[in-house]
Image (cartoon, rainbow, N blue to C red):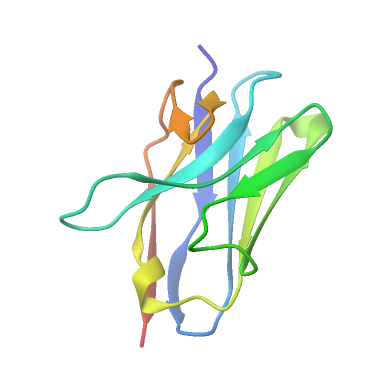
Length: 117
């Protein structure tokens, strides 16, 4: 299986920006994406990108604020998060095989994003 390796995250004030990256352990043509889980809540879909056509799609809660891009040469995806809000605080997980809004591949270890108000 293609393992994801996440990086980025941290602490930021509301309105600020952060960038998350996820590198696949080897080349993959499967859609890759990000999910998040806040304390006491279920894991939810954030964004994913289809390699063919370079088509990203987003959860309604992040549209217009988050931008997902890919680096073909390194099988890496980058999630640029702007105008962060306190409700974006969560552990963010990468998945290397996304179908619709469901991750069916391996999960990364997670990276914490904390937005202070």
